[in-house]
Length: 128
Image 1: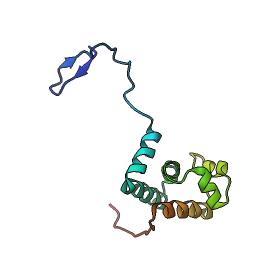
Image 2: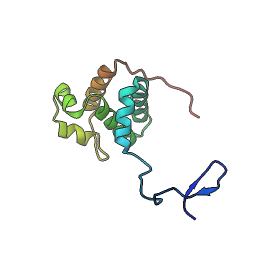
Image 3: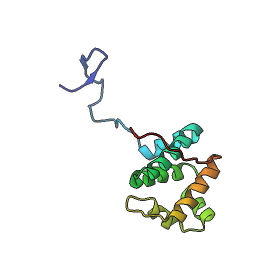
Image 4: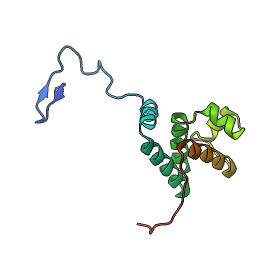
């Protein structure tokens, strides 16, 4: 049985439309861009999470998160101008297969930190 369920779990057919007529999700990247632009604390939390992921051995996730943050804040063309690196190279560095050098990563983080008006401070905590 298809349909929409109400709070009690009782099925109700959607009026005038089939179940799959309307997408249930929106573009994730656009959602991130909009949220970062309206919520500076969210942008700072993304930067903090990306840095933490790098430091804790999860570079793939960190690169992808940093890529989304760059797209939502600085943009790759402006990042290229500020780092003196080609935008295409920066895109590759922050891709799934990317492998930025520490110097390039530091340059990217410097530009994003500057845009967000924050510093990054690392500290240790007891392992869980």
